[in-house]
Length: 93
Image 1 (tube, rainbow, N blue to C red):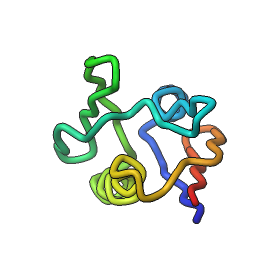
Image 2 (tube, helix red, strand yellow):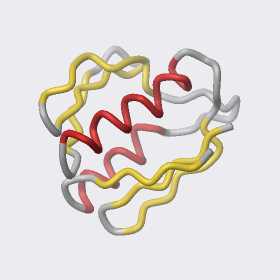
Image 3 (cartoon, rainbow, N blue to C red):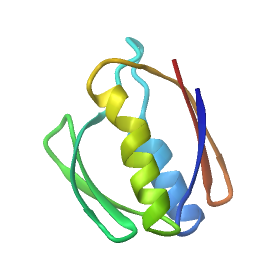
């Protein structure tokens, strides 16, 4: 399954892609979603830090949260991320 997520700008897209970081064992670096505030998501990482990502709008934030939740829960794995300007294309299986 592939999803295109539009961020607020190219910086936010690069930040999101780097935070999704795929380790050699296909494990993501995101530990959970702490909060969704309008078009912003605050995520926690496995290193116990928290980071904010700004999306184009509230719909994009909610779509990302819905898409990534199955990966956080261990049901799916991220296979690829690609950044094209302010869009992050994320593939999972």
